[in-house]
Amino acid sequence: MIPGSAIPFLLRDPPFGQKLFNASETFEVPAGVTSISVVAVGGGGGGSADNSGTDEGGAGGGLSYRNNISVTPGEQLFVVVGLGGEGGNGDGINGGDSWVEKATTSEILIKAGGGPGGVGGSSGSLSGGKGGLTLLAEESIPSDGGGDGGGSAVRTSLSYAGGGGGAGGYSGNGGIGGTSSSPTNTLATAGQGGGGGGAAFSFGNAYGGGGVGLLGEGLSGGEGLRGTGVTADQGGRGGSGGENGQRTIGGLYGGGGGGSDGFADPGADGGVRIIWGRNRSFPSNHTGDK
View 1 (tube, rainbow, N blue to C red):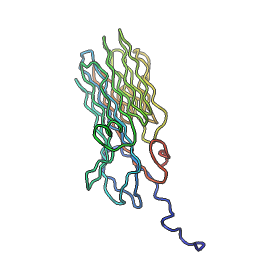
View 2 (cartoon, rainbow, N blue to C red):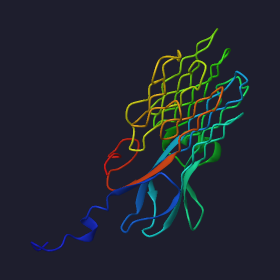
View 3 (spheres, one colour):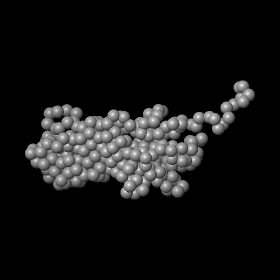
């Protein structure tokens, strides 16, 4: 090649970038981009509040990721972000699914299930939102990995509600929400690359499950502490950079809301993130680069 001449087009690196979606919108594939990788998290389910003494928390949303998806520059993709379910005066509302599909063919490229809402009078431990590998097995939705959201336990006596489930993780499921009641104290559990389960709180709202981040896999989420009525910050710990669950809402992204004897908490919204560029793939290969 003559010194100072332009670099041949075929030797140039492909475009490098990312886009985070906190709400549904149409995405146009940038010029020069022929392959993308995507992570999606469903919305967390809302907790139940039926004053029956068995107030289940909402389940966490599932997580799914898929790499090296072939796309065409300029084509339109529909990106749908599942909202967190509202807490119910009775049963909680289910969290919404998150997915990406091609506008011209309606082909679903990836999907993550929303977490079911808590059920009043339930025996507890509801299933969480479906993540990548479950959806691949049950619905043939393409996926390279991910985990289901965590469910919720339920209190067994007195006025204790179940904590919300944690969002699904990159390497496993979210943590299960706990209870704090007599005669059985059920501790919340940690997630696997996702959020940990939230804990109960005596005579009031339980805490939400932890969320999961969209920048790729990091540390797993820890479990919430067993509620005592005085201990602070008992929400499930967020995994992979997700937010901790709160006493008012599950943690972003996808944490389930806690149950309550009064007004139950909503689950957190889900999210979607699309990345492109050389050597970028989930769960952790340059996924955090901007």
